[in-house]
Length: 522
Image 1 (cartoon, one colour):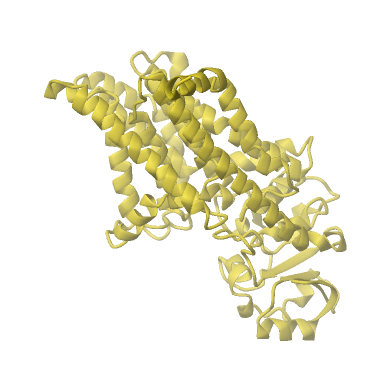
Image 2 (cartoon, helix red, strand yellow):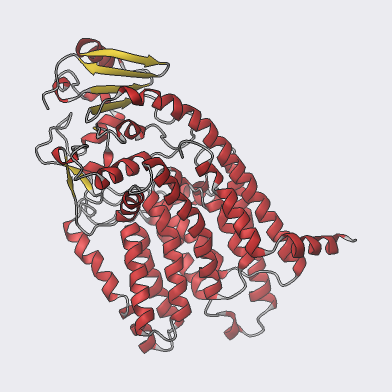
C-alpha cells in the first residue's frame, strides 16, 4: 500500500469525525477528573461564593451575619448560579468538576455548530479549537468568560443560519442566547452584539431593510447593557483609553499565541504550532479561494469574507484597547481568544481525502500532546495544593480566616494557584475568608455587609491582603479574626506582628496556621 492510500485508510477507518470528536472531548476531561483539584487562580473563590449563595439562609452556616446578596442583573451570574444549583446534589469540588466538564464538552460542539452554520463541512477545521480549551484565562479561573466564548460562537452561528428569515421563534431564541451570554460575561456579550450588527451590515449591504431588521431584533437583549452600566463601577475611571504604545507588545503576544500559555514554558511550543496551523490555513485559503478559485474581481468578495473583515476589526481593537476598563482586566487577552477562533470561519478545507486525513492527524496529535502536558502540570500543582490544604481540618465552624501568601504561584508559570486557595479552608464549615476578592466588586453576587470592618480602610482592601500584607496592622485586627493562614516566608513586619499577637498552632513546611491570642469579639 503506497503512502497516499495508507493515509486515506487511516482517515476513513480511524478518523470518523464524530468518534474522533468524542474521543478528544473525553481526553480533555482528564485534567479535571484525575485529581482532587483543578488548579486555577480564581476558581476556588467562585466555588466558595457559590456555596455562600447556596447556603445563605442555612442557620448552620451563619452567612447572613457577614454577607449580603447582590441581586442586580449584572454579568458573571452564570457560574455562581450553575455551581449553586449543582451543590444541591454534589459537593462543591464535584460541582466545579461538573461545571468545567460542561464547558469542555460545549466548547468544541459550539464551534462546530458555528462553522457548519456558515458553511457545512468544516469538521476538520473545527478540530483546531481543542488546544484553545485550556487557555490562559480558563486557568486564571475566569469561568464566566471561559463559558461565554462557546456561547458567543453558538449564538453567532444561530443568527447566521437564520438571518434570511427571522421568525418569532428564532428571534426569541436568539435574544435568549444573547441574554445568557450577558449573564456569562460582559465582554463576550458586547462583542456578540457588535459582531452580529457588523455581519448584518456587511452581508445585507445591498438590502438595507434586512440589515436594519437584523440589527433591531437584538434590541430586547441589548437593554441589559443600558440597565447595568449606569449603576456599575465599570466606567468609574472614565471611557476606555485607546492607545498605540502597546501595539508592539500585543502583536508579539498574538504571534506567540500567548493566550495558550499558562502552566509551563513548554506550552509555548504548542502555542507556536497552533499559530503555524492558523498561518497555513490562511495561506491555503487565499491560494484556493482568492487566487485559483476566482477569475473575476467581482467574485473575490463573498459573504463569508465578512468574517475576515470582522476579524480584522477585532484584531485592530485588540491592539489599541487598554488592559482594563474600570475594575475589569485582561481585556486584550479576551479579545484575542474571540478573534483567533473567529478567523476559523473564513478558512477553507482542502478537497482531497489525503488533505483531510493529514490535517486531522496533525491536529489530533497537537491536541493530545497539549492535553498530556496540561494533565502532567495539573498533577504537579495538585501535589502543592494538597500540601496547602493539609490543615483544613484544623479550622472550626463559622471561623474567620485571614490568609497571607508569600508564594502565590508555586510551580505554575503564570497563574497564582494559591491566591484564592484559602477558600478551600472555608468550604462546608461556614468559614469567612477575608481574602475573598469577589466581595469588593459590584459584578459578583456576594458582598460583605455595610457594617463589616475590613483589615484596612480602603475600597479594594482585599488587594492588600493578597499582595501587600505588610501594610495591614494585624495586631490591631487580632480581635476580629480567628485564624491567620501563612503560605511561604512572611516579610519581617508580618512575622514580628504574628509573634506578638498570635499563637502558632500548626506548621507544615511552607504552611503555617496562627490563632489570635485574644478572644474573638467580632
